[in-house]
Image (cartoon, rainbow, N blue to C red; front, side):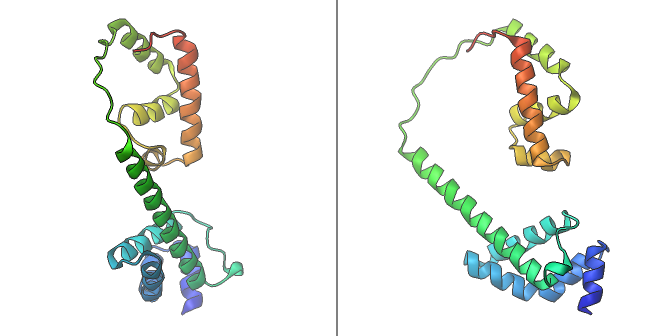
Length: 178
């Protein structure tokens, strides 16, 4: 039974992920719960880890070990990443709480001509770079969210944004800072 599940998992058969979950869920949830200390967070962690594995064909290689061991390692890694992220987020929130509130400032109204120049410069960018920049700066999405939304690797999004911003900087030259 294990051999057939492994073959179907590698072949990405539609029901293989569900069958792997059914077979290994108790162990996977136990690993996640041990790391995270919370049943609901553990279930979310297992779900996220399995989806990440499923979206990455070729990540499981049977010559390196069993499917069970691979999934346990993936769940443990997901739990550790989640915990590290929450620790970093908590630390940022604590530091932000210690900061003095910003002074009230009056902002200079946006110059209509500068706004038009920016719109025109954006329109001249290649579509991929423009789409990534619009998602980041006008829809306030993180680079990871943009990568998921557009279905491209995170590194590609980072490159597109970086190249696009450099092109905008060259195109716009000296734009008055507000």
